[in-house]
Length: 471
Image 1 (spheres, helix red, strand yellow):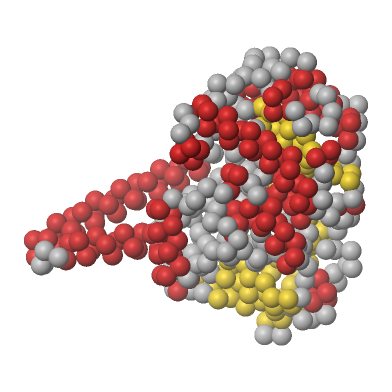
Image 2 (cartoon, helix red, strand yellow; image 1 turned 180 degrees about the vertical axis):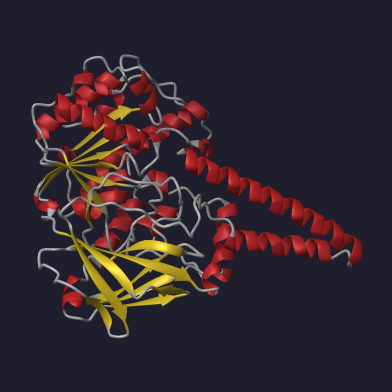
């Protein structure tokens, strides 16, 4: 986390402590002045209020502006919002502009402090994009797929529990369909490729998927089978290794185009710090990558000694780039996605590109996790994907946001349902919280699966930042 986010986190915790002290004082006073049953009633009501309205992890103020910078030369058009719809004030929208981002100011109404503010987008079908409760600042809505309605004057936006400013800026990006290019998708763990890019790879002409780690840690769910911690971790690693090779077939990618490297979960930072050192599993007791590679379609440099080191990882990735000769790489966004394995996966890929004789043209970057907001993308499954919080500057990348039709969204949900790490039952505390939020805050979760990723990633859009590798 940045220094600013650390300050916000400390302020958040300080206010929670003050609120707790004030609550305890209020309970003591209530106990002295009111009947005995008023204290447990107040405790119950306070708990319900916390679970319904104050349990989100939001480490910035909803009044902060998002601060995006885009590449020089991209198209920005002033637009006006009115009763007649969204209207471009000056210029026109080119036919080739397919990714459309609307920058505007949004302010929550009083009800939008308790219910999620929503922007309803009515044009080519209906869309809904949710924002933070109490929002009062600059936000970026995703209008990709609405180009025809916008050009035809048929696109309308309405705020529910929020007010939209009458003036805005439309940022337009023209991209080729990258599904028609040779792709190499880098997934730090089994399921990352599906979460970020199932819609992309399921229609790609030529794609390969490489998974860096076996994802063996946090295997407590498997100890119910009578296994100790190390054995449970080994079982989980075997299952997720199988997932990384088998699940892509649901999207049309055969195992001959999938590679599992077998490094260990949450150990990429340690490998990077000491590139020659073997860094084994934290939980399973293993320290050899070769047992996870038995389904791989080709031999790689680390197959010679099985050492889980950074230098072996770089050599493996360079060999894969030269073997598959991708034009486009797909990987986690190293500045936006804070998961340490995700950050170092992309760093390793960038170093491997420098080592490789084959040079891809560009990176498509995705974010499956965020620093600031654990609910993004906000709102229900099937809705659009507004841009995530950007309170501090990011590199000025372009954007590409392809659409997923309902049939592809359903297939994506089923691909997630096959992932063992997304099958664990929801803990009772989270199940109870969802029930409270459904009842009091109007939130909804899909029937396709209990894990939060079924809500977050099965959407109208997938979203990628476009970063050139060749200058």
